[in-house]
Length: 336
Image (tube, rainbow, N blue to C red; front, side, top):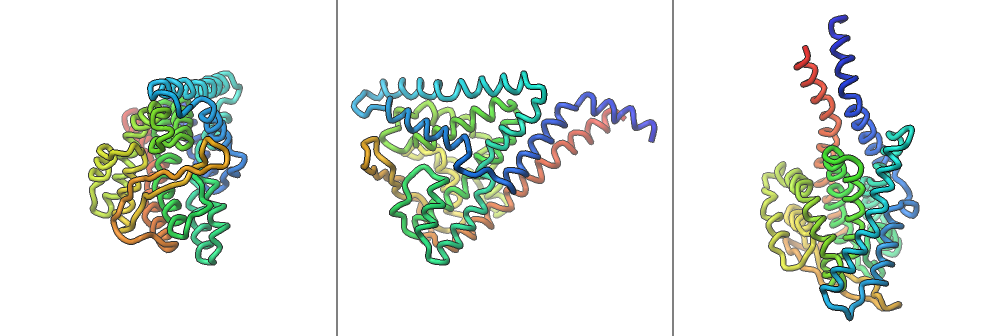
C-alpha cells in the first residue's frame, strides 16, 4: 500500500488541474439538469434580446447584401468579444477561478432541463390546455407561438428535443475539454445569435452569414457525434441526414437533427414559422422546408422523442463520468 502512495501523489499533483476541471464540469451538468435556472433570470435570454434589438437597429432591409453582411460581422464582434474577454480575465484573476468556471458553465447549460419542460407540454396538451402549452414553449424558442395548433406545438417541442442535447450538453463537454471556458462561451453566444438571427429567415440571411458559417464549423464534430449516438443503436447511419443538411438549399444548421429525428420517429417536421417583424405590430411568416417521413406528430410523439433522446443523453453522461477514471487508470498503469 505504501508503494502506491507516491504514485497517487505524483498523479494528483501532475493532473490536479484536469481533475478539478472534470469535477467543475460534472457539478455544473448535474446542477443544470436537476436544479435549472429560471428562464427569466438566464443571462443567455437577455443576450438574445440584446441581439434582437441590435439587429433591429442595424439590419436595414433597404441596404445591399454586402452592407448587411458587414453590419452583421460588426454586430457579432461587438456582442461577443467583450463578454469573452471579460469572462477570461475574471477566471484568470479570481482567487477561486473554479467557482466562476462552475457558475459560467452552469449558465451555459439551460437546455439540459428541457426534457422536463417537454413532459409538461405533453401533459398540458393531454389536458386540452393549448394556451398554457404555447406560453411554456414560447419561453424556450425564438418564434411566435400564438397561433400554433397542437400539431405545431408538438413539432416545435420535438425539434427542440432533438437539438437541445447537442447545444446544451455534448458541445459544451467537447469544447470545454478542447479549448476551455472561452471556447464554450464563444460557442454559446454564437448559438444565441443564430437563434436570434435565424439564417433561414430572409431578413437575416445576409446579416447572419458569419454566425451561420462559424456555427457550422464549431458544431461540426459535436453534431456528427450526436447524430451517430441517436442513429447507430437503432441500426441507422447518420450520414444521410448529415449530407441532407450540407446539400439543403435553405441554410439551417439544425436541419440534420430534425431530418434524422423525423425519420427515426416516422413523422413530419419542419414547416412555416412566424416571427415578429422589424415593423412594430407586424408578423412575418417564414417558410421552412418540410421533412416528410410519416404522419403529423401528436402529443404522444413528444413522449416517443423523449424515449429516443434519453438513452443518448445518459450515454454521454456516463462517458463524461468515465473519462477521468479511464485517464487516471492509464496514467496509473504507466507510472507503476
